[in-house]
Image 1 (cartoon, one colour):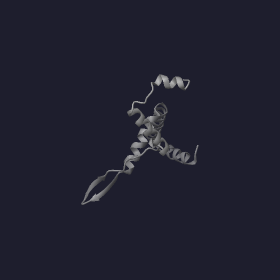
Image 2 (cartoon, helix red, strand yellow):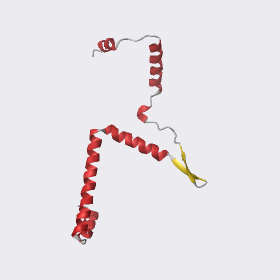
Image 3 (cartoon, one colour):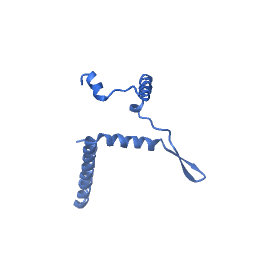
Length: 117
């Protein structure tokens, strides 16, 4: 147990039984809430990513005072590094799109066969 927690519990010991139970309930509720969020994020990691992106976007918004009222400034578009492609990948993509428009495609089953899948 940390020193800070020991200090807090010594102070709680001096309180009435009702106050001790109220603080104990708050602590247990907080721990249960943290455990529930941890389980949720383990089960759905995309939820955490989504919340993180939302928080970053919100952080980028700025409010300025203009004649006593708030004005929200729209942020620049948030770019996820995972969504960015390299120049080489962009070149391959352009070439593939051009071939697709020209009808130069193969059925997926043929591609898998050629790759031995």
